[in-house]
Image (cartoon, rainbow, N blue to C red; front, side):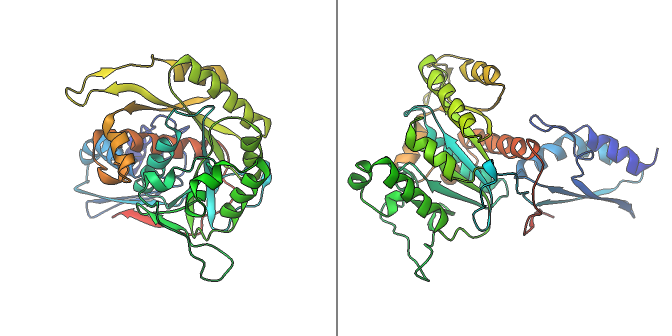
Length: 361
C-alpha cells in the first residue's frame, strides 16, 4: 500500500453524524499529493461546515504524521455550496441557492430565536447567508437583530436593498410597516406582502436564505409555504407533549404542499442554571427524538434554555454574533453543521454553484 493509499484509508474513516458517506467516497477530497515530505490535502465541501475541519484534523492528523515520508501537512479547505432541488420546481430567487424555512406548529417554542442564531451559525460555518422575516403578524427579526429603526432603500426603484443585521442581509415586514398595521391584515394581503418582500429584495449571492415563518398551520401558513421556493423546512418544538402535538401538525402541513421536511429541532431541551451550570429538563426529555422517529425524520439538534440567549435577543445582539465561542453558541454551530450536511445528502444537487469561498490555507 502506498502512502497516498494509506492517507485515503485514514480519511475514509471520517464520517460524521448526518453524513451518508465519507470524505473520499463523496468526492470531497480534490487533491492529495506528497512531495518533498509535504502532504497536501485539498477538501471542497458542497455545504457549510467550517467546523468539520478542526474535527477532522484533531481526529486524523496524528495518524497522518506517522506515515513514512510525511513531515508536514498542508490543509486547504474550500466551500462550494450546492443548489438543491426546490419544492414543486418553483422558480429560484435570483442569486439564492437554498431556502431553509424555519417553522413551528405553535408560538412560544423559540422558533425565531432558533432561526436567527441558525442563520448566524451557518455564516460562521463558511456560507453566505441572508434572513427573511416572514412572520407577517409578529415580525421579531428587527428587534432580535437590533435593526428596529432600519428601513430598506431602493437604488433603482424596482428592488429593495436588504438591511444589514449582525453581518447578514435581512428583510422584514417590520421594516416596512408599523407593528399595529401588520397585525390587522387579512390572509391574502399578508401573503402578497411576503411575496413582494421575497421577490423584490436584492439578496445578492446567497447560499442559504433562512426564512422565519409565522407559527401555526392555518391558511396563511399554507399559502406562504406554497409561494416560497423552499429547499427544505425545519420544525422547531419543545419536548413537552402539547408542543409536540402541534409540531406534528406542522409536519403534516408541509407534507400537504409537498415541501420536504429536513428534520426536527428540539429547543429548550434542558435548562442551564446561570449560577452553577446545572442542567435540568424542565419540559421533559426525549420528546423531539420520539417525534422525529414517529415522522421518519432526523432530530437535527437539541438546544438549551438559558437566560443569556434571551437577554442577547432582547438587546438586539444574538448570542452567536455577540459571543461566538460561548458554549451556548457552539450548540447552534453544531446545529448549523447538521442542517447543512443533512440538506446536501437529502437529494441530488441541481446546479453548479456560482462562486467558491476559500476557508483556510
